[in-house]
Image 1: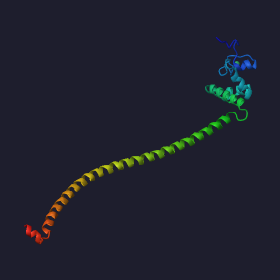
Image 2 (image 1 turned 60 degrees about the vertical axis):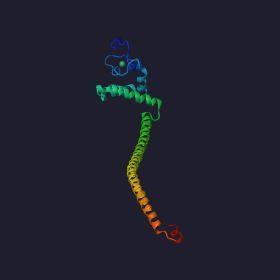
Image 3 (image 1 turned 180 degrees about the vertical axis):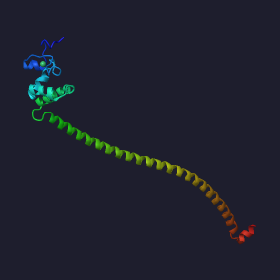
Image 4 (image 1 turned 90 degrees about the horizontal axis):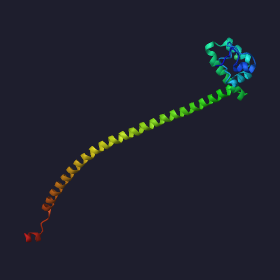
Length: 178
Ligand SMILES: [Zn+2]
């Protein structure tokens, strides 16, 4: 077991600052000795005394863990990006959000267009089906009408042929053969 009280295993801060670590050390809960690079980063960017003051005086106990994590993140980023630090990442992420928002808007607009095309296609299909049914009924009626007309025309022609026979002129030769 580690024994901070006996100063056998100092926290990362006290080890770096070469001072005696105690149970009351403000850095002890947030900067364990197994991750010395974290305190090294915040010490380099913010300074140990500022970190100590911030944690001890400005931040409630229940928020100090999150504060230490964010300080490490900010300090590490600042060391990697000396000009913009976290602001560079925030700006990059905001640009990504705008780009994705634009792509989302385009996708939504395309969805509306596709829905409209689908509705039109369905309307055409429904209209064609109704037209087919109507034509089918009309065709059946036309067939009946054609049958009737053909029958009627046949009767007329038959009557006409009788009429033509009766209308034939009678000549002298015809009378001789009768
Ligand atoms: Zn310590």
